[in-house]
Length: 142
View 1 (tube, rainbow, N blue to C red):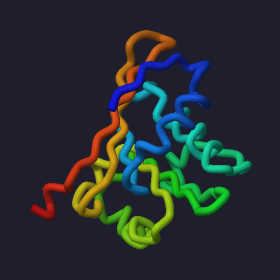
View 2: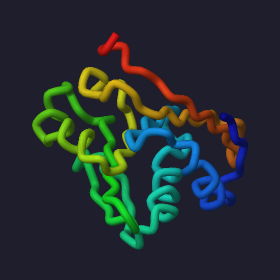
View 3: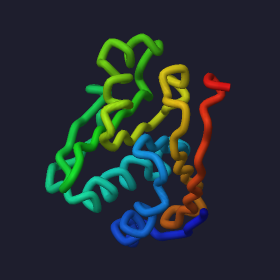
């Protein structure tokens, strides 16, 4: 599934893609500054949270209260090794049944569940993005 949008349409695109997220574990891929955190903020709002959403770059995880579920936003850009994720109880979050939005997931790949949804952001220009949604089976389970 693919969508193209402008940054001014971020809240509408978040509402639109929620039904396509087949797993509650969602991996966000894209380069630095492509809008991963901005999209996650919009998704957290779309899930009914009124919490102030910010990047968990230094804390690794930020929790939010949605209408029906908790939402966990992870950013593993700054970790030095996978064990740092293990130390914060990453696996427990993944299997909690709550939403887990993960940036820089390639740094914790061995802890990812068997299946998850990938949201890939591609920068078209300063204001336009293409978004691709796909489901993936983790190769560690093959």
